Image 1 (spheres, one colour):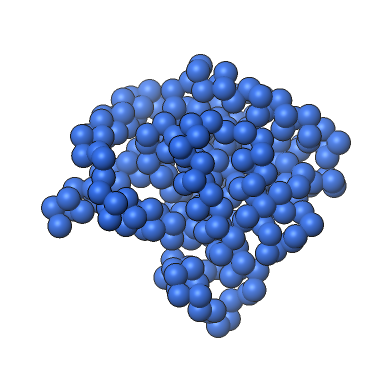
Image 2: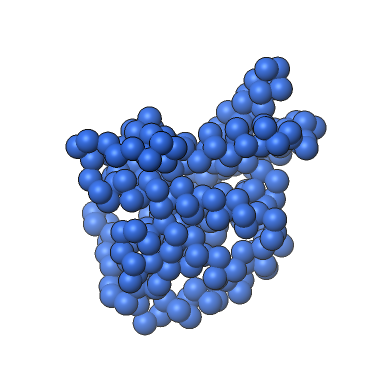
Amino acid sequence: MSYQELLLKIDAIKAEIDQHRPFSNNMQQQLKEYFRIGLTYTSNAIEGNSLTETETKIIIEDGITIGGKTIREHFEAIGHSDAYTLMFNLVANNYITEQNILELHKLFYARIDTNNAGAYRTQPVYISGTDTVLPPPTKIPKLMQEFSTNLTQLKKEYHPVEYAALIHLKLVQIHPFIDGNGRTARLLMNLALLQAGYFITIIPPIIRREYHTSIIASSNKNYLPFISFITQMIYESGKDYQRMIKNLIAY
């Protein structure tokens, strides 16, 4: 199935979900907290965090430390949860700024490295196992300014799903931070989806190889591999979201 066909299916799912809006406060809160854990767990796991989904939930909701897990892994869970809250607070704005991106990264990374949280990298970085060449640190501020300035135009030119995928891809291609680029990009993608009335999209850690392969394949402005991959992820997440809505309403 082509990604254009999936876009039609995604919009059909959205239309069905929209029939049940506005959600009750209780339903909104349940959905928000469910995806707080799911997105935090999966996004961290993609980057090598060994916390399980249950352990992530215990750390975030109960404030209990998990034996045998590193302090950094705990900080990644708590920090991502904080950034997730900001993401939801930004939905009402219906726009994204460079400062929003910096704030998302700062909240995620603050406990791990205060000096680099919400700050552009000042040293070169490399992606192991690939020949991908990332921009030098001297170009990061200008690239991020251009990226942020172009967001409004991108939003006009592309379907909301394509737009969300593109801003995710472009951020990781710039790789503006010393660490936490992928997690910031996934939060940014979900912010764009929520602002357009869509739903939280999760990338399962079990397919992180396909995820990273699609990023590498989408170089030189060949965005199709990554857009196609993300469209599939949004479609699968939409079906799960649709089932949850039906179950919550029936309950």
